[in-house]
Length: 542
Image (cartoon, rainbow, N blue to C red; front, top):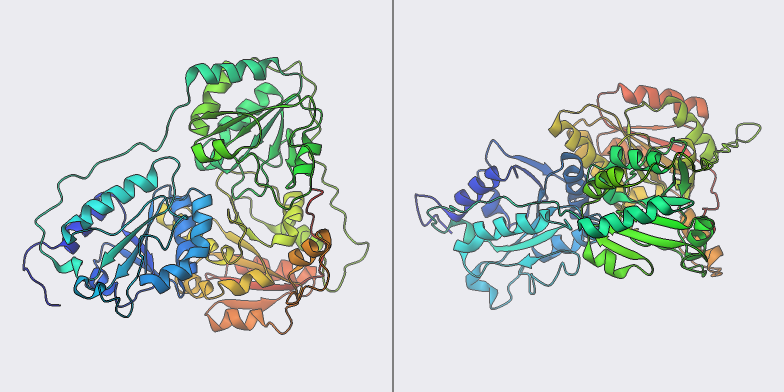
């Protein structure tokens, strides 16, 4: 429809508000119902085009994590929002503040459920958004954005959704005069925190389990200080999407494990466990056992009331993890008299002679020698994550990312979002995507965006020709004969070249080292395909 006014419109007023909120990067894949918002796209905004909506959301997810501010997503009506849902689950579990917008059909037509209408637009993304809304009036669109920003940012942070009829953007609107700021942190109850500190001080052999909320809140350094003052063992939370403690630190005891039995076994001998910034616990698969061993008590600090309520055991405290840790450092007694815990064992066993194809440990051994110290890792090689912790310990804050949902198809576009976030904040560091060959296919088109932006990403795709993680689960769950677990006939390097990347094969350790070092100076995105032997993943026993 033609402009109804030569003056300010809903669109112009909304763009002014977005500038005020510093929401000037839009991740999207445009559709006809979104074009009235995108028309005459402002020169001070950036549009990041991804070729499918699942990639759109994953890119925005890690961009928001890296930059530390909400990201804006624009997808197409119900079809595009449906495509985005899988990775929206990851953003929800990862507490990423995203404002996801989708176009709705013209208000005049909606009652008749026309083509490209979103029949239940507010319901469709639930429960994977904190808030979902379609403005009752066109004049409410800017204020809906303001509330969406506040909802997304306040703890627990997370994605929100706005459905906006396509004819709203051209309606006249004088201004929106009520932009505001909101807090993104809540301090813990001082009295209850002091009680936690007293119990930690009195513990004989305390342990810390540090989850992704710690790194997201900027609590890395404080966590190190707390562990060192307590002289406590530190474990990584199960299936964590961020790393919150240096994995090469002598107090780091390794990943906690994933199953009920594995967690219980690992915590045996600790009289008190403090879990900070994680679920209690993110279990999978089901291997039965006691939720806590005899003689062990558990304390829990999280910013998310739902996570606190869902814990199967322990006493909880709500509050910002960084703030809580910094206060605990001052409150707890010095634990220098405690015996030093055993650090994580790193056997790093390699075959006596190089294998063909390479084994995953051989791949990680090469990467451990040549990985730049400032590199960031995005991991979606699900069957080899134990090798990553062993060979490539995360030693810096904000330098490890994985999906928070368990679904694959997040990692390839997530690496793009990390690199774009680094560029936005002026950081220069290589991004390494460790991706399984099965995972790579889910969002393969994301490498096109990486190539278009000439991002410094090195994807190392381990080509074992199967869904190894699912074969491992089939053995654990005693479900033989499951179909569809083999992946023959994939030419991943050619796919990468077809999308504009540098795509190469590396059959030997020497090939991998040479191609990886070349990729670091290639000036664009490289996909290195490494044929590898399938392996049994470590599951319930880890």
